[in-house]
Length: 375
Image (cartoon, rainbow, N blue to C red; front, side, top):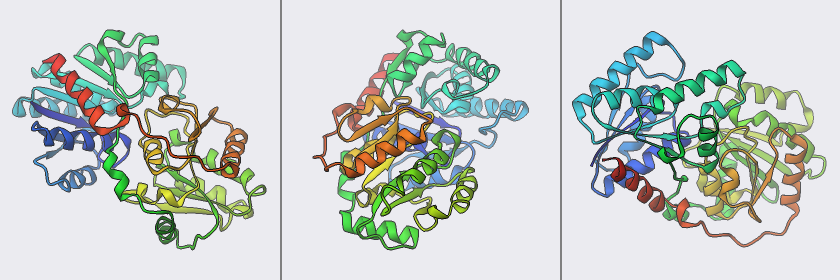
């Protein structure tokens, strides 16, 4: 099959990781795959080239995250012309803006359209008029889609509850990771050295709480920092390492700077390539998100064998709540803090194996089945 992936931005987050992973695996299986990318094109383009696979990346000059009507019309025309030129069997679009523009352009240009929702925008905490706007946009766009993939049952239920699309048009396919990644995860001592190099610090017997998330509102990192304030008095040897970048980083740095008891115990490590390699250097992975789809970082932590404390949002509860995944209600710094302390004090449990649906092979098998069903 000839497949054109379309995504709004190229900065490597969860949706971009998903596009790269499935594009590489589909290419290995003999499909002709291209990726059209808006926004920060270079990062995803460079990552696609590293796989030494025949995956072409195309820059979309007019596809941007923010809503700008004139630019969005240009973006629609650009994608329409690209589809007419490439003539793919499948246009597989990802992320909200590309999901709208490429769904309509792809259908009108004569291709079959599949859309993966990596968490619907209308599920975020928004003013009612904004929420209604996004629901209407999704309803209209869904008329042009042959199939919609959600990465969690939670998102599928939300789409049906808001009458965005009928359940018959939805396929739930969780994110999956390559189990071979485990060979790249460093042992504990080496992982701590790597974390130390990123933080310009030395870690020995400290209790390390790790966050791998960009500083975006949905990740709610200010809440994690407030929760950590309550961890420190109970566990003075605790350290919080924040890996990622984003527009909320200055605000988070200001919270730390204003609180002397956080000085020297909270580290901003910036964006790190393949941060999962250092996971075994941490004692717990923490997520304070107010919205999630199916976070890769939870799967990586499970593969590394470290416990996770996360908020009960989106598809996270579907990832196997149990000894290695403790969930708390969102927006509660107190409950998040208590869960982190309890996890740090608990005896380490044996690692639970990832089930097949959370593997790369299982995910791509299911996506291929969706493609076959619409052609």
